[in-house]
Length: 182
Image: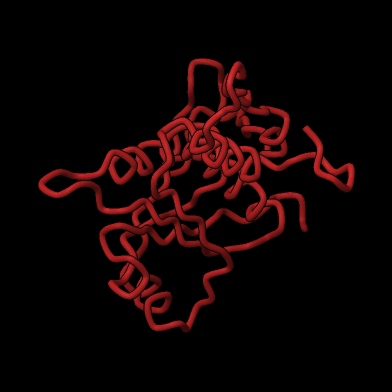
């Protein structure tokens, strides 16, 4: 699908449009159009690295295919404090409130991929705290996503945000540095 100016829609645009379209009432005799997810928009992520030595650095595992699987670490207290006090810039933020897991996964992967490719270092991911009496689905799922490919190739560390940034319903994320020198 293209925008009015001939540009292709981003993954975020597609998700937003599908959310808006679901709230509209179709004309008599017409059905809702469902938009399929565009995997091409997410293909800009870096390839997984491979290593030939048997020994990997701490925080990495070798998969059966021989790829390195990076496990993100918890953000250290000093970095978290600097982010909370504004001494380190938060280069972007994404709000996953009200999205399904599938929509949130696509939006988060697209957002983090673009932030990584543009050299951003710290971002804020707002998951929400969940419904009353229970822990939110996205609040539980996002840290699990960070530990698995393709997120593990770009997420270096994460930690709970300060109260004024969303507290338990948000995460500070430190992205890895690009290896291609940009």
